[in-house]
Image (cartoon, rainbow, N blue to C red):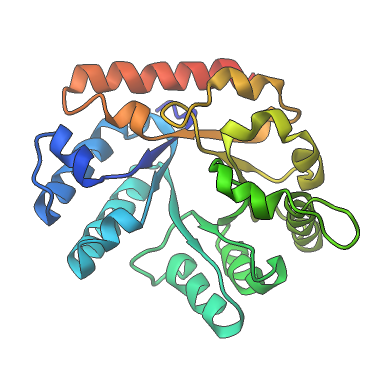
Length: 263
């Protein structure tokens, strides 16, 4: 198998399910996941389901997510659950158990988290991921313009908040002698990410925003340390629909463009 340097986001909205001629219900969700999972098996480095599109169907939707993540991992692809969790103390520990415990039905390889209760508040999640060789991707600089109000603000020592968070992720990695901590950096912000990438050190970077959100693979080549970036897209691939040939042409084109951008 050849795993391309690309992460496929799985965002099964009502609109997307209708585009695939599927009902907007648990059965449609399950059929969608089974089809996409089979088509990309062994093709992409990682698959990133956005948990909200499963949560909207309650426990039945979460059951679909559990089965999907388990099957994707069985096929040899990495999974990153896009849940953007974050809390303190025992709650953070419970999140860590939910996504990284070997006995968990939601066991994943990676998880997205929010740092705005402090990166140190995420220690329990980092620690549990470390035990199983997992990765925790901290939202450092997002693609949405409104995020700049917080991320580009400055701290009392005149650091940009996003840079300060990136340095905290780096310190955690260096203290654990591991690369458990990663970052989520929006590709639409590519023109202003060099200082954040420098602050992260060698931490891996998940970079959504390619395609429908307006960024392009060419934006990645201008970034320092771009070889540790995992570019991600969802709608620009999934809107090819349930025509298998069109879908495969689209996913293969994304993989080749990612590979060219990251050499």
